[in-house]
Image (cartoon, rainbow, N blue to C red; front, side, top):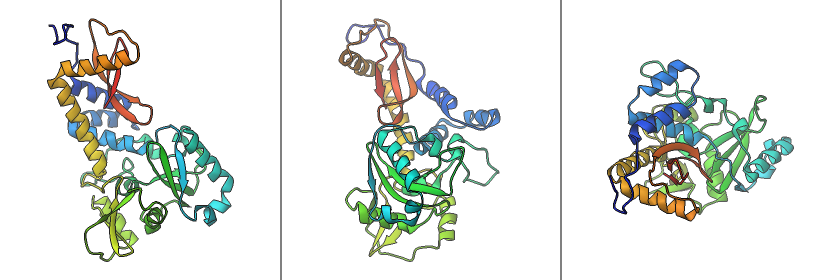
Amino acid sequence: MASSDGSSRPFMPDFFVQLQAEMVRALPVRSLREKKAFATLSLDEQTWRFMNWQSRLVHPHPRQVNKAVGFDCLPEVRANRQRVDALLGRIARGDDLSPHLSKRVCEGYRLRPPGRKDGPDFDLLLNEWGIHHLHIHPAPASSKELLYAIFGRGVAFALAIAPHGVWTSRQFIASALQSWPNQGLFVPLNVAPGQDPSANDHEALRKAGMTIPVTHGDRVWLSGVTLGLTTALVSTRVSMEASRVLRCLRQATEAPDHLASQLMAVAALNHKSWPAQQVIGIRWLSGPDRYCFAFVEETSGATLLI
């Protein structure tokens, strides 16, 4: 069949089936049993769980590192100056930070008892507030001292060096607001301040998928990075990203010629010849500044990030 520009209609597999295959292939799990269990989930749940795992990764590309006000004066920084500087240098260069991440990053999906939602495949500090935690000692020698930081595509905001387990510390939010008030890391809500819950209550509410807006000064704040939690324990941002991926696949399925023309333009920009018979699929890959899904024309290598 010929397309609108006279070329033959590209061969496109069922994108939704291929998306599932890519997620099953790429998602790290502890056992074949959990891989099989993940493969039986609905496409929607597979996608948001996969994107939740993806959000825990720190893509290796150079970033401008910004330290919070008073960062260098923190006792934990002074006591670990050499390792802290080395880690910040790795972030700035765009080195692979996987050795500094929690080992739980390798558990993209975990089977859990009936009725329990939380588990090691969720980083609830990250999902609610957008704050990563990295060990200043790389694996296998993990450390009690962690770097708490927020990562953007070309920037990193180093909030503090603090012990493991301070998952609900309001100091992180206070530090972000004092140091970068105009970056949108946390955004104000138009509601009256109330009484913040205790750390234990906050952790319990997080595990139930409840977002806790935090009072600082005379205002109430929500993460501008994640937009809070959903009841599935993933961030609102991750839920939106998962929906966007599925929406793109639906659009590509409904308008294959439009997708082919976009990939043809990419091939031309990269001085690649466009094959008469195109084979277009979906892949999970590392883009220049993020991990993402992409449409790929196999012969020319033309790639369109989603």
